[in-house]
Image 1 (tube, rainbow, N blue to C red):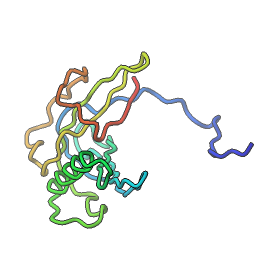
Image 2: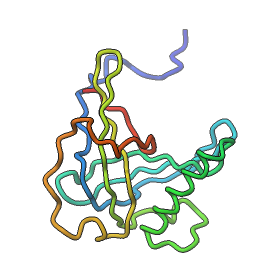
Image 3: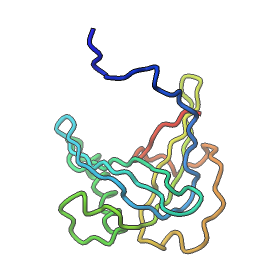
Image 4: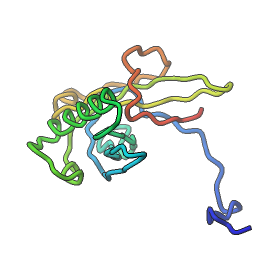
Length: 163
């Protein structure tokens, strides 16, 4: 059988437990951005990279629904992308790459999920703001994720991290 995956499993390291980004406010940039078309739906896919503080260089993968057969999903995705556009100080972006490398602030929350006897932490970007709007004060001590944050229910930007 051909090696369709092209992976030599003997050269793959075991995964270590991932630690979520601590809840808090951070200055970040869009470090990578692309458009993806899946099942006739259009998404903006961005890597949001924290550029200062204790979580510097940590990344949250964020998906923005641009066009979708579900109007509610499209409304939420476009609304979040508009919030990011305004946080970046962009007037009328026509290309996803216009978002790259412009500093802005994010409010990060953490949710906890139990699944099949394992615990997963998810980071969510609750809000995008102009630089300095959320991080004017020194970065607060990180909050240890406990899964009791009712405001972190948004699925946007979530990534599963088993612990």
